[in-house]
Length: 572
Picture 1 (cartoon, rainbow, N blue to C red):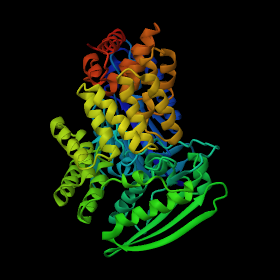
Picture 2 (picture 1 turned 180 degrees about the horizontal axis):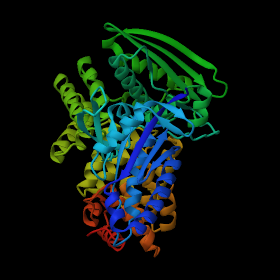
Picture 3 (picture 1 turned 30 degrees about the vertical axis):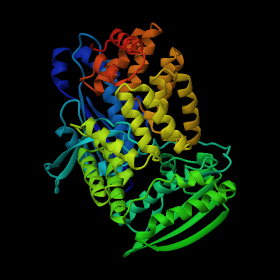
Picture 4 (picture 1 turned 135 degrees about the vertical axis):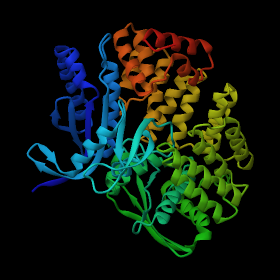
């Protein structure tokens, strides 16, 4: 008997039997079109439809992330394909991951049955996933989830924890990039990727410490102007699938790869380090260090200096070395910060994790009221929560910069706050300062590019995005979509449409900018479909609330965007 693991998606059309009674031939024709659309979306994400049952569809995916993305894409595409004066097809989905039995082209077993039960429990237009599948996607998700609690199902021995997809995630720095492989045969000189430190066993305390130290190294190495450092998202994206230094070099275009293994034994930390060149995979140097946990940040400083000297052949000027972010006054604060960041990675995925992140970061501030990084990250963690207080956020980020003006991330966040407040010159100043402080941080470049587009410097935005994508071929979608927005702002509508069309995942924002560009080119039918898809994923969307998010310095830009979207069919 052949078995395999599969991410399962089961979907059906709500009220289909009633539609057949009211308009049999028309409904049957529409079902055929719907099934063709579903098959297309499933195929695009490497899935396979293995069974249809009237209006029901069962599909499998090798990737849990792609299973969720496919269900979301199908739901949005159906909204875009609805014809006027017809009863809308409203689907509901159930997703689960399980070991299934293969019978020819069919899949059977308890896992398939459970996915079907989850689908039956879902409301119209909703996507429910099991706790088992959620555990696979939560660190690589493009979506926010609502925790629906435990649910008992008939003939299922144990209750099942369910989550519901609420919508797209926000622009979250710590989320992983799309897992796509980009081969870059040309390696940049004096360039390095820091892979996530491995840990022994499944100790959560060791894992969050390892990830935190990896990020510390990436940030601190990024301060050296002669050193090109791959971003966190790029390093984490290739870590699991391409651990070999030569393959990492091909994927990220770097000449060196730093790998490490961490063990925390009592109050001591042991780190094994290996720096390899990526042409042949030859080890350049390796070291094993043991220190008390309290000395861990001093350890980071020493590692950074050694790598910088080895890779670039010289140390940067003393002023840049001295510009290191100020460390906490005690290790309790650092430990709380790392725990907060661990929850923040999932903060866009569930509100509970965002609240826990805010709690841990607040504890870091209590332990060390002068810890600038904790204030900056607390703003990020809190900003996605319902009821976020922008004034408290501004106070936190002002405090962070007061304590440490050399924190690049804090300067970037302040730039975003100033942009939202209409203080465009201040937004530019903080964005430029952020890039000066960490010139090789691809995420900072991409997010600052958005500021330049809004203030009317979209050509410079495109240059920044070129630099960011060269540094990091795995940038998150919400960074890459900035290119399409900049092209739109320049009136290069056909290029904007093509750039946004190529995104690995379509966001509400990308769809609406495509719609506006399509109307500008007199392609209203296509624009209408984009708007319907956008509304299908965000029902309360209007032209006014969308344009209010796009903080253009020139008010005519916002008015023009709103006009084009209304012409495309978006409610005013």
